[in-house]
Length: 279
Ligand code: PDD
Image (tube, rainbow, N blue to C red):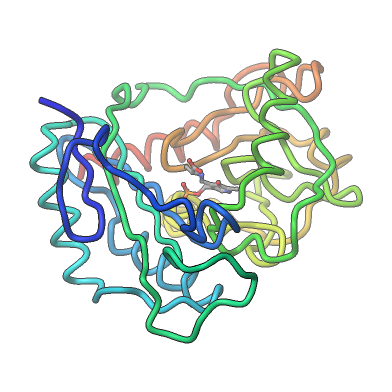
């Protein structure tokens, strides 16, 4: 069966879908996106993702083209048709096609809304280890918007790949903010520390779920800026995202960190997240 895409209300093979040359997403990165995990043919935390999509959309002065409940229904229908049991759904919303110009026309916009499903490997039973590569955080001040303007993240991730690392970690004037496509956490004195969401940190859905799980696990949480020197001395470091779940950090710029093994707090959170997914 060909890979299907839902695009502006029509379902067709992905290879046949077309985007206009003057789509503002293509010319200006004028759009937002979401990545939703599919486990056992079910969309995980879809409501939370659609809430964040609405916030991102409002953040770029773009009205959602349809109500969340209707969108959720269309997404569920395409996911069922895709036949993918373990995978992810990619959704993108742009301000659509209009004659090129920085100033956008008043509403209503001719949105381009699309989503499609991609298979992923089933989740790992134990958290995998990852190597981080440190990059200066040169992104804009509105990282809480899940914008499709990802070039700084793309370049950071490629710099990481070039030195054999798995993910880039952004450091903003000595403070660890987040990673190129995941949130960053450290365990310091038994407490989970992560940078607050906002100008420099995306409100990750995995992050949100992990912070919700912490009280019942008896893990204290501190949302505060975290200096690079503190992170390097932390008992544990891990990163989290929809596609990665939780990965413990084994190396930071080639140096072994966190004792070189997956820490106890990381392991407990990974287990609790797995139970949340399967439960
Ligand atoms: N990335 N921070 C950034 C910059 C991200 O791009 C992501 C997700 C996260 C984690 O958010 P969540 O838990 O909602 O996935 C944090 C997705 C997976 C991506 O771009 O593919």
